[in-house]
Length: 582
Image 1 (tube, rainbow, N blue to C red):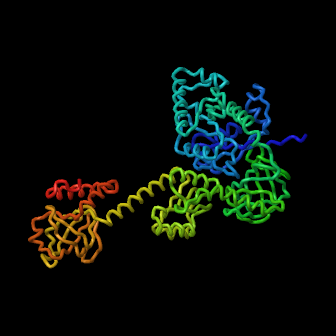
Image 2: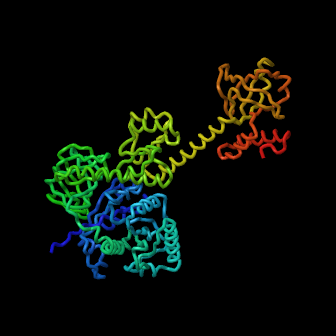
Image 3: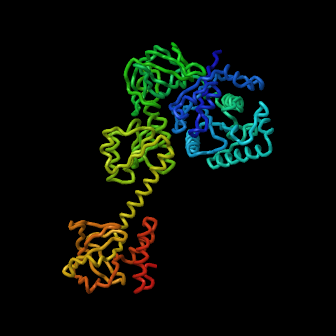
């Protein structure tokens, strides 16, 4: 009987930007990468192969508790915290079989943690929580090698402090629809998320974390881990070393050899063919690659390809064995499942640096109620500008381009005009900015619509600037608030009709409008200035009772000055009609 081969579970390590993801992997690897990162932040996804014999060494509890390890080890993926990279994708779901969500016990759930939780929930990825930095709890001491016993041995005050922190976290997770508890309090891991308190710095809790991962993998992932025949993988990125280009990728199923030809999907789901020139696999607990003739999943690999083909980060690849049509259909389905299903008939334009982060962004935008018309991978270009420009005519709110972890091509930035471009490498910041802009734009459009029906305006008469007394009266005014336009009907402070503004002049030039703080000359036909306005101080725009009620209903669109003038106009009107506008 042939024994079914089982692959390593793929584990993504994710969480907020500085909660210690890489430090936990360093503790597992026994390396110190963290110090070498720019600003201590993981720059790119990297992977770590952790074979079972090394797991036993790092976690004596496996043999102590007589756990039989069927899995050949783990493939850990370290993700940048400033990205929603939990979303590395494969057909039918997340690339990760499991996730370790790293949370600083002292800081709890931050916006980026919430973002990751939403993506894990969306992808239905099982996860456990590494409650890191317990050593930073004031007064915490390592008193026993057994984690549970060590927590119980802390002083009363320290234990109370710890309990308060982890119970607050359990409450926060509850609001996301998850039940959680400390790992040693859980009997059914399918119903509760386990929290493993640990310190990447002192390595306390690291063996328990490994034990939990092994237990969860063996109990709940057995069927998922059966190794298929066809090699399938995901491209992470193209890296340049000296004069050579290398493709870094994750092989998540099957077996690949140096003699194989692979098909890589483009953004439209079309396959691009290339032969493998060199094939290398990541070495266990290392960043070095070793040449191989044959590699089986799950693992991190590096390839040089003989043909120059379009390669985008996050795209799927497969071995091609005279089945190009089948591969094409699979690719089309995969890309349309992950992107097209999230698009709307109207909405903004979105760009991201990889397929995984693009889909994560689309999911989070949808949750925030922001529709997306068009999405793509790579820098913001002229074509994106053209799509956003078309939105100016349809709905100005959608004349927006959002770029995650990408920049704007120089050609494109020259034609920005009225378009709004937002770029960031932190998803929640990007979404917050877009949401704020859309709300402000909505109010502006609504206000313009309101003001198109009626204007709110208060003018101060400048008696020292009377240029003509009558036929027409021409004199100076200062716009105290609001806006004056040609044809505007005005009243004085007693509520008497004065007439319509025929012309507005600014420094002897005719203008169509004047706004807050501007001093201009206006002409009023059929008015004798001395007789009608000689003893008046202010002029107001005339509005009907219905217009007033409409303004009152939409007062959130008006600024404080406009609201004040509206109140003054109402008081003037109520001298003649007490119930006016009520």
